[in-house]
Amino acid sequence: MDTATLAGPLEARLSAVRAAGFSHVVLNASEIASHPGGEQAAAAAVRASGLHVCGVQVLRDFEGLSGHLHDYKVDVAKAMLRMCRAVGSELLVAWSSTSNHASGDAAALVRDLRKLATLALPLGIRIGYEALSWGRHVDAYPKAAQLVDEADRANLGLVLDSFHVLAARTALDELDYVDSRKIFLVQLSDFLWHEARSAEERGEAGRHARVFPGEGVHSAELADFIRRLDEMGYRGDYSFEVFNDDYLQLPPATVAGRALKSAKWAIDHVSRRSLPLRRPDARRAT
Image (cartoon, rainbow, N blue to C red; front, side):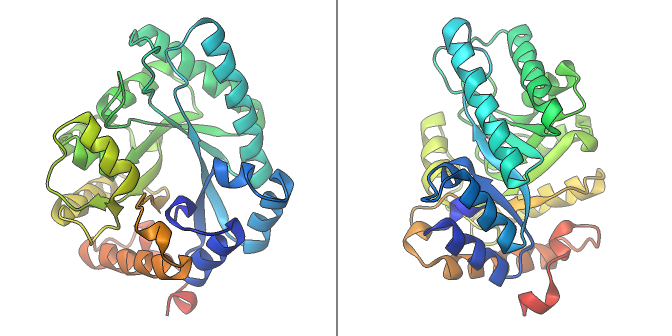
């Protein structure tokens, strides 16, 4: 469960996630930074929840910059890496750049991703690079996978987000060329219309109108996406990343309950014992 899907204070979000039966959580950096008690109080709340943090997001617009813009983003990255360490996360998610100032030169992008991975290495943190479907130069996972492969760092991998795959209509056959060991996290969500015809539409839907798997209009494609990941050997974490303005107006427990129904939908439609979605605490989930 991604806490960005829920409204309310961090403690209330964590409590709702745990009460719904989930054992893992993805945190948003802004929730940690804005905690009234500061970063250490946020970290204490996470530890008290008993939830395992499988990722923190999100580092934006890092790659492809130069000069003072690059230096600025390096400082931001260092601070976010320290934040990951504080809350016990071994993964920092980095979105592909949307900046008009970013170069699309492949060598520059590879260089910056390699540098980010190097910064994370002493802290024992991995970098998960995610292609936004409205990214300026990298807007689909095949391109992101190519850059990660060229950067060639053990702690640099991919974050795959089903929304971006569906919204950009990226062929699932491209997964055949991705090493499952380089996938560090898979984020799941759907949306309510059949296609988003422009980067602007994808951005609007992706930031404000996602729904849980099983609630949208791409259920068949989403089920196929998860099956393919399982068949190619992916055994990492799955997270519900559902940015939805309506959900932010509902009690966290209500939204977490919808997430639990979605987990059951995935279990019913993707019948594979190896899927992590099959592992909630049964006593909590009933």
